[in-house]
Image (cartoon, rainbow, N blue to C red; front, side):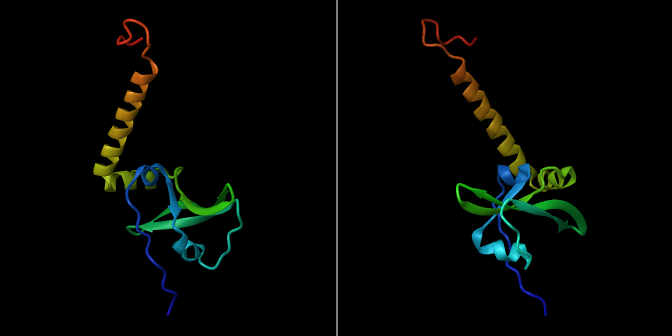
Length: 121
């Protein structure tokens, strides 16, 4: 009988739909699958979804002394499209929120404090 691995549960967010997924600490050993990955290195992996293989990278990074593991698949257009199609409602909401935020930032950036400051440049 093979080793039983834990499942990964992830909230659909911008990073998931954008091509990166950080692995929670309690799952790191399961994702390494007995093959120790040195810091600042990565290896190719296959993600299997609906009997189709998608290429990705499993990477071990360090930021300010903190170690983390990520699945990186931002260069795999087929997988990104499958994720976005599957979670289309979340994708549309996240995209529209980003556009709305960007628009608000633009309004703040181009307003002056002189008389007539309500005009956009």
